[in-house]
Image (tube, rainbow, N blue to C red; front, side, top):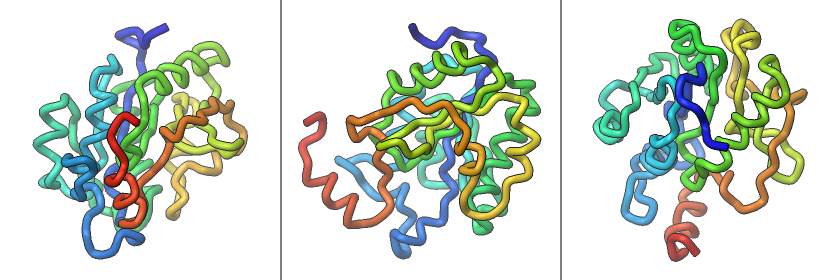
Length: 202
């Protein structure tokens, strides 16, 4: 089952992280197989018919901004990105509230291998578990993004603090497992170098 149009769900990609483990470079501008890392997940998920797609970025003129906008994303600048991932979660949630969204699907922009099929599974689980359920991805039983939060959790999302984002809410989430490596996030230059040595698609 594919995601239906008019589903009341907003897609938010968090792209305002400080990349502390990546050194001085903004990791989203680093090249993975010849394309900036920040454009991979955004490009994959651009085809899904969410009611709105947004990018939470560290600044409005990020090097990926033109590419994001061409894909149909609205770019929202997080002026407090240095204070941790929770500030991006709050920015995304504020956008969802403004749009009267029923739910928000939060993804990380540094997960280049995320698939549309997995996001569709999250949405299907949300529809089947009830619209007050938190749905999270899982790798080896560990709850992690991408995750889908219903509007009943928006007030809590707006109150998250620190660099752990919405991880507390994921402790009671319904888990949608993945075991194909598609939840890999590129956190260090070493991981990026290792992925660049691989042949895409293999």
